[in-house]
Image (cartoon, rainbow, N blue to C red; front, top):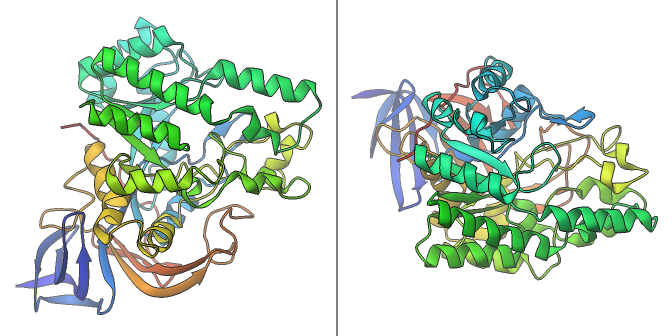
Length: 456
């Protein structure tokens, strides 16, 4: 049998196994794994790792934030993702307050379709917990949004406990999954007000206004409400050891709960906020970077299964002109960091390379588990006949020092500037077509498709 494309001689790494084999592709799909496969086109992967394309379950492209928008649009952001070995992203619908969920979904898809270079899904944000909004949950699920984002903080998004419980009950009854941004709103508002009234307005006061207990308490509360409602819960961007341990305990009790962390919480600390002048603004995100005793706990639980996924929470802004909106007050700094591109390589260098993660666990948390949790597996997240031919060729020996010159994200800085990595993607294939070759985007723009998702 002759395949359209054969990726030959590489070491295939999935969440379950590591084997030496060829991958045969016909059209958009993996057709066979084997030895000595022949194809119309051949890519030599000898000495390289061959992975399923990364699945990033948490990105914010072209998202309005106050008076500005995240700086990567659907084209630039997904090109950067592809350059880093990610072939699927899941972004968010943020319907108008009081508007219909269906209208919000249609508007968001109109922004992405024709621009995204990789396949994408969408989580539906529930900005209210009233009956009028929650009655629309089954319709949103039928339209392919099986996961629903909730917030425990932020004006215009925050649900109080009664509203959050109602949302959990409605989504659980419909067979969906609730995502939660878990921070205690009252404690944050008190902290912000205290620092502002004292004239302590610099970026370093951002993390002090929302310390670790602010997240840990909210995660515990959200888990309790989800248990009462009988709804599966996915805690986004877990930044603290205390919060991660709460998720692990819930899972040990048998609760259907999932924890996500992000590269910034694994490899950076709150020492970044002490940079001179206004430089700390580059690292303002919520939850903030944490003290150095937190990353080791996150790594340990990520390896052991207490945390399930690594997303990026990619929400980039230019330092000049956007982060600078908060020069007078840290409360006005747009919250978010760029990171969509370096996720796989960061987790390889600081996870696999430092003995914190096995090769298979690396693939699981970056590719397979996000696909499973969000209803994309086995179409995405694995190398197997019948799966989409989303494939990354990763050179474990390639050395790269991260900088703006290396990365493709549309912003004027990276929080990972100067980090030396060993191991980097050298080719990305999406649905059988080469998108990225040796750091250069060579694919077709706008080829990404919306992925309607149900949950098993």
